[in-house]
Image 1 (tube, rainbow, N blue to C red):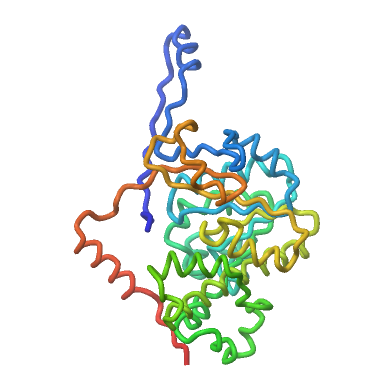
Image 2: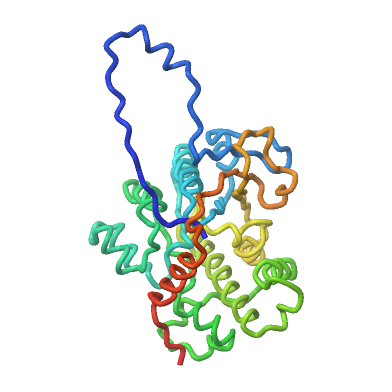
Length: 331
């Protein structure tokens, strides 16, 4: 899990008394920060600048930018690419995993200037990372009157499906059924195998009822996001969709992407996936071959520092998060 906090430092650059120094500063290469994220075309391994990437993506119906939640390098890339795409195709819609579909009215109130940012975070159950991770993207859209769509399944319904299984949806009151997409648990074998391999921790996980319910909850998220993307395309014809999501929902064109293409096979969808690398991210040293299937384009990130080296403190912090989690009744 990545850190959900960031310390921002601002460096003031003093005015130089002598103009003779300016050429030296202009010629110096830009130092690479910890959030440097080089992009390559997955198929060829060719480096691509963000302006070049935007040009290549400008005609796609949907651009899915996967992320590692809380990695500031990923969020910086998302924000910069959003702006470059806007320059080429100003009809743009931002769809977000980070807001649940039932919170769309709250999000609309913020976009219309009827709520402050902290009110948005409180009333829409915004993620703790919102101010540093998603504020730039939402503000870019808001100040240009671009639609922002809450795309994720309602959190309490997801939790209850994870506890009780898919049949829980049959007990929903009528006012909650509009939030449920058609075929909410549509899947394919490749995604199922990947999920149980990664999340199940070994052979036999598919026989575990709790793990199967967790997979159903994952599918509900994927299919809800796919449905919301298609709703946005219908509501805003001719607009390009930029979708933000955790990379597991999109890499290898599985999850949400597969659900999207199952519903509308002729849709043009580009997938941009992050890859962590322990090396300083120089293009000629990147592990491209091992990650080529993850997306049409890959961007490489250095890992964030460990949150805890003391295992007990780490466990205590996780338990505190569970204790502070919203209480959900599934009866």
